[in-house]
Amino acid sequence: MTSRLTARVRRLSLLAGLATLAGCGGSHVAASSNAIRASPTAAAVNAPLSAAEIQALRAQGWSTDFSKHAVALTEFMDGGPPRDGIPPIDHPRLVALASGDRFLTPQEPVIAVQVGGQARAYPEQILVWHEIVNDDLGGVPIAVSYCPLCNSAIVFDRRVGARTLTFGTTGKLRNSDLVMWDRRTQSWWQQFTGTALVGAYTGARLRALDSQVLSWTQFKAAYPQGTVLSRDTGFQRPYGSNPYQGYDAVPTSRPQFYQGPVDPRLPPLERVVAVFDGRQAVVVPFSALARHPVVGGSIASRPVVVLYASGVVSALDASAIASSRDVGTAGAFDPRVGNRTLRFSAKGAGRFRDQTGSTWDVTGRALDGRLRGAQLQPLRHDEQFWFALAAFLPRARLLAVGSGS
Image 1 (cartoon, rainbow, N blue to C red):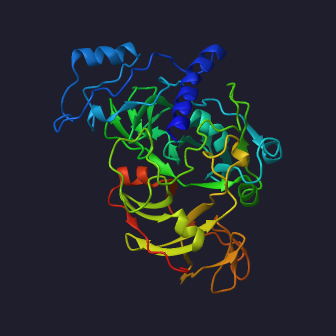
Image 2 (image 1 turned 90 degrees about the vertical axis):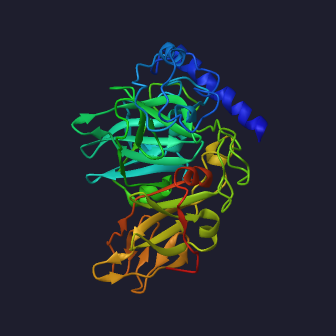
Image 3 (image 1 turned 30 degrees about the vertical axis):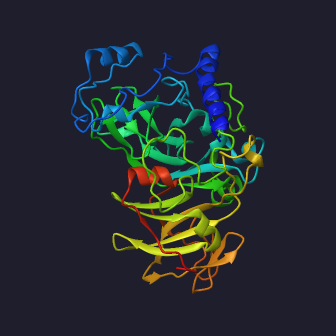
């Protein structure tokens, strides 16, 4: 595992050179070798940076207001590539589903987003090389983000007050998670929470939008009028290959870029689905969902049903994503339709049956039966690795797993 991750760092560090040679991407500056400071102290959150530290950051091209920060600056470390060395996609090109069939295999993972009646798929085979797409969908400016180290795919509304921001990659990590920056103020934003931690926007929080990781086949079935992000990104990258080969092969492994404690309730690299209500979260591990594809519970007194389906491969396993192992996917929904709370059971092949005899899929659509055409209300949820979820939300509650909802 260590040798694989060392190779990964070398490969990612090469991205800055590739972008420079191609004449693409943002600013390319020299990365520092370690964290901003060597070790944190209890007073570090309020401690100002020294003149030398600020000068070093200025030399990297930062004009961020480092006097404003919500966490200790010691918590940030370099991830390898410099700022925008992993370049975001600012001018996404979109194609029809038929064109997507030319470069996507049926089980490949895509991030599915629907806004204003429009649906779009963002392939992880592209996001694994770019991590951020600044786009507009259904009249809403969005940022589609994916942190491979945490396996967290989160979509944000890019508007803060009256301003629309665009985002890039800082090259920094916190709790092994991508730290983004906005080009208006160069504030630093945590991808996992959507919160600005350093700079003029410190304390601001982006609004997360509903999204779901699906296989390419599942997306096409659910959104036949949708579009898909094209490989024609303006960058030269080996899309379809995985620069993180073997990263998630052993769930019990400790992520190399994570230095904090690991919650022992689950293995560090266990995939989980987390359902959110404000700052609260309930969690179900994928290992349990593979055995019990329907899990019911509640969050903030609201009923929840989590549905799991196989048929989605990992973007972080084999050297070719299409050849990776099946890890499945999950969706979280409010099980109420009208005045009725539905009870679900697994029907097999990614299908679920309720007490009315209606059949549903993992996107919360009723495919047949008395409720055909109904859509469960999605609840804000993400898939990620357990170590990251527990680092940011240590009070997250594990849902009890049974045989149905």
